[in-house]
Length: 256
Ligand SMILES: Nc1ncnc2c1ncn2[C@@H]1O[C@H](COP(=O)(O)OP(=O)(O)OP(=O)(O)O)[C@@H](O)[C@H]1O
Image (cartoon, rainbow, N blue to C red; front, side):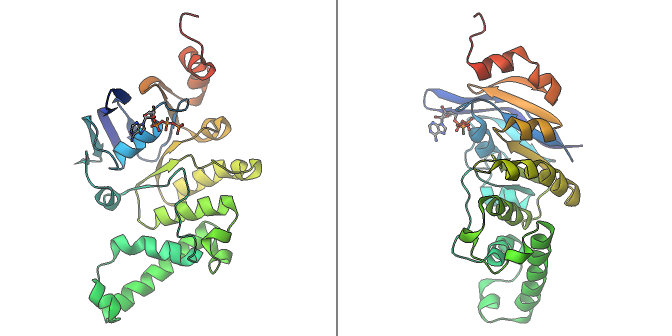
C-alpha cells in the first residue's frame, strides 16, 4: 500500500531549481533512501515533504491526504515525523523530559487544566510518562533517563532524537543523515537499529544518508538525485551498478 507519494514536486529558489519534478512512491513498511552528491537537493526534498517549504509546483500525498504546503505541525499530526541533520534536542533537559515534551501534540487537556493539575491532565500526564518510559526502554535509553541530553554520547543523542520523533506516533519517519557524526561502531549499529524500529513500531522509513554502507545495508529502494534531477531509482544492486550514478559520484561528465 502506498503511503507517501509526490507528484512532480519542484522547488525553485530564484533562478536555481533545487529539485525538479521529483516523483516518489513509498509503500507502507519500506525503507527507502534518498542519496546524491552535496547540493543535489535531498534536504530541499525533505523540507517540501515536511512542510518547511511549499513546493513551487507539484503535489504531495500522505495516504489519501493532500499535504502540499501544509504547516509542519499538521503534517506531523497526520503521521509524518522527521529528525534533522543537526541534532535538535533540548540539551539542558533530561532525556526523559525531551521525550515527554514531544508528546504534547497529542495532549487533549488545555493549558488551564495543566496549570491547575485538573484530573484529565493528571491522567494524561501519567499515560504520557508511561509511554515515554516505554520508548526509552525500546531504544535502550532508559538507563540515561535522568541525564541531561547534552551529556549523552553522540550516537545516543541521535537515538533520543528518534525517540522524540516516535513520541508523535508516526506512520512514516524521515531521517536526515542519521549516521552523520557517528563513529564506525555507532554506524555499524545504526543499520540494525533502523530495521528494528521499523519492525517494532510498524514504520515506513525514508532517509537521506551519505554512508553507503548504511544505505546499501538497509534500503529496499534508493532514489538518486543529482543537481535536483532524479537520475536513478532501484534496489541497492541496481544503484551500485548504474553508470549515471557512478558518474555523478565521480564527477565525470556523461560524454567523457
Ligand atoms: N533556502 C534556500 N535558498 C536558496 N538556495 C537554497 C536554499 N536551500 C537550498 N538551496 C540550494 O539548493 C540546492 C540543493 O540544496 P540541498 O541542501 O537540498 O542539497 P542536499 O542534497 O541536501 O546537500 P547536502 O548533501 O550538502 O546536505 C543547493 O544548490 C543549495 O545551495
